[in-house]
Image 1 (tube, rainbow, N blue to C red):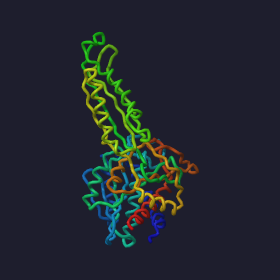
Image 2: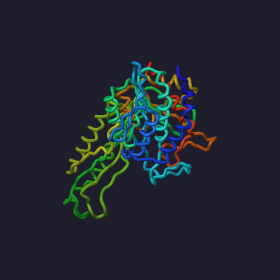
Image 3: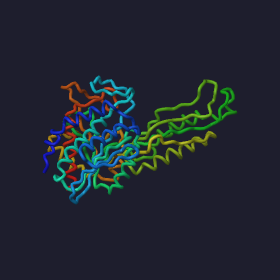
Length: 388
């Protein structure tokens, strides 16, 4: 068997170099032009075949030339609209844009894997696909990625690591079953008829039904969902009107639903649409429902594949932290739905180096780059075991 630890150590400086390049040159979702170009340039240097897509996704193929399974390793590459405050020497050179979620690390690790395994194709069977995926932050990148992989012949499994600084270096969160929540982001417009505040009878007020709708949606979990199915309706914005004596034509509410039961996905949309329709009509208004992000199902880790990942982590000496479902969401969910595998979190906090426990999406987010070495080794060894 290949010495994956030695390979990760051998190419660690390269992975760090790539991580710092991506960190200094972040690009928002659907704008990953130069990031994609850099990835292709690096793959060209290695002689690794790949396919680049119009949406800036890239899929590289490591083909052993021997029959066997196919494993997809996914790494997202987009950044966030955050003004960096880390003070790092390789801080973002793009005002208002930052790799505040670790995607610079994910893309760099995939390049490290390409460099390590392209020189050792005889060390495994089957194929490993490296999916450099765009637009995770707006949940629109994995849906086309699923199709791209299918067009290339599909995959038996998909795996990915997400770095964070809420856990310490050497710690990993990995467990089977629901791992991260699904999310539906809704914007509901209530359309009435504007007029003077002194003559409400001559208008159709959209503000009252908008307020009632917020309360109606909040009652769904307790009234319509099994108490053992965690679900949260959070209407976080309500807006309408411009003055105290003007009844507006329109009001709207804006929020999210987080949930773990994939079977509820369509039901949630029906509730949003039917309840908003009934409330609006009861006030003589009409409604429009928009889903500002593509609805995303929960991340659900395959039991057999996850057990392999846990075994690899334990063999590496990583500390498996207590299973704890997060209410965050990730479009890795669609890849796992199509190609059973696992998603896990790898810790990168190290107080001894001044890298504290800072949450992802924070302007001060960073990780101990030694976690890149661990992530690269873990992904290569897990893929190897899944190919058997």
